[in-house]
Amino acid sequence: MEKILLIDDDEGLNHFLGRFFKRKGYSVTACINGQAALETISAQSFDLILLDYKMPGLNGLDTLKSIKAAQVKTPVILMTAYGSTDTAIEAMKRGAYDYLVKPFDRNELSRIVAEALLLNRQMKEIVSLPNTQEPLREHAPGSGLKLIGHSRLMQEIYKTIGQIAEKDVSVLISGESGTGKELVARAIYHHSRRKDKPFIAINCAAIPENLFESELFGYERGAFTGAERTSIGKIERCDQGTCFLDEIGDMSMGLQAKLLRVLQEGEFERLGGRQTIKADVRVIAATNKDLELEVRNGRFREDLFWRLKVISIHLPPLRKRSEDIHPLIDYFLGRFGAEYGKPIRHVSEGVMQRFAAYSWPGNVRELENCIRRAILLCAGDVVTEDHIELRDHPRASQLQTLDREQRMAGLKAKLQEIIPEVLRLSQEGVHANLIQMVEETIIAKALEQCGNNQVKAARMLGISRNTLRHRMKRLFDKQSDPK
Ligand SMILES: Nc1ncnc2c1ncn2[C@@H]1O[C@H](COP(=O)(O)OP(=O)(O)OP(=O)(O)O)[C@@H](O)[C@H]1O
Ligand SMILES: [Mg+2]
Image (tube, rainbow, N blue to C red; front, side, top):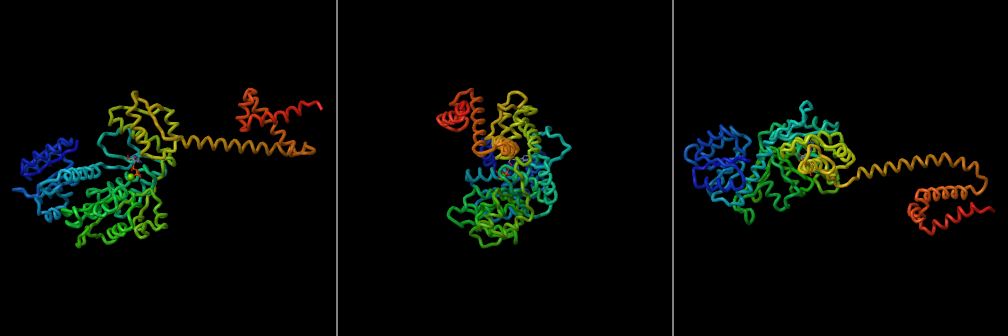
């Protein structure tokens, strides 16, 4: 359960907010002054803190400073009275996550709280690189996430992450859907010097273009109808932190230019604002598009492409690193087994075979969902084929096609050995003799395999029953003709 701390001298408001959050399933603690809050914080950690800006005794700004010193990663939302937004924005520069103006709009309150809690989770849930010495099964709940897989391809990736995480460079991560791009971005963040600063993930494809600019860069009060207060954008909120731009290939050309300016000069303006704002942001971008192709087709700025691609990491699809499937299964069995209280030890041999033959179009995410589902369905301690549902079997059918093609090639080689012999023995009408010989053999064998059932034999050969009769008459009647 996520824990929220309320700090406000207005007990009525604490009561109202307490009920509001408890109904939403959070645990709530309330303090009526800064001093009491600091004592509470020294004894336990919180996922989110709501702090009144104006309180008697220790003021909001000093309390904020002490909170940040004690729990650097916990987001703090300031609550201010109408008209004091400038001071609130000033406080944000000192580490507050956002501010809310009293009286609250419930939707706004819910939205900001949900976003802050997401940030809290992403900052605190550490994504670690694999340690080969450690047994995978011992996965304690709440111990964070881990990058799994020891294939050569993945080891290269861990090496790159290790080399570049601490350097303050941009990174471009590419790869098919579900290969772990976001997980790698988070691993880089957790191993970087910016690990105590915000990590904000933005999906460039999920937000409609007209809203996206204000989401990224914020807006001034009155910038457009409905802009009732100055809003801080994600880039500004991410100052000194790491910004993960997912699906960067979907960003509009106009915004690409503004992003480039942030990367090059570290500055931008809020929508409708004249003041230039400074922000020091490390960008990690991800895409499942071929960005080079997008550049060639004029859909992505070349200068931004090169700026982002200082370091590039390509995540290979799971089908190209099937040796990672086994450790991933163990990891997911351990994780979800603990989550659902089902100590399932392994998957059956049959499941392993199907997994090995499968193409995994949804990559690690698909495997993860498959194991999660299997654990929920499984009553015993072994996952069997009954608990598994895969989308298709392209790999199996591909293997069959390959197998057939290889055999046909073998037969053709045999034929090439036989034919010169036939040529030597034939005297005249070589072509007709050979075709007749082949046809006789095919028809005789087909009839034999179909128990002399002409309908079945015709179907097997892919000819009509009449044609078959006709050929049989021509071939065999002639043969049996004594003349
Ligand atoms: N190597 C890995 N080890 C452990 N878990 C992984 C690994 N790769 C991916 N996952 C898990 O698979 C899921 C998908 O990963 P992620 O969201 O990072 O993929 P993505 O490449 O960003 O996908 P998309 O392009 O669809 O956004 C996540 O739940 C992630 O934790
Ligand atoms: Mg992703």
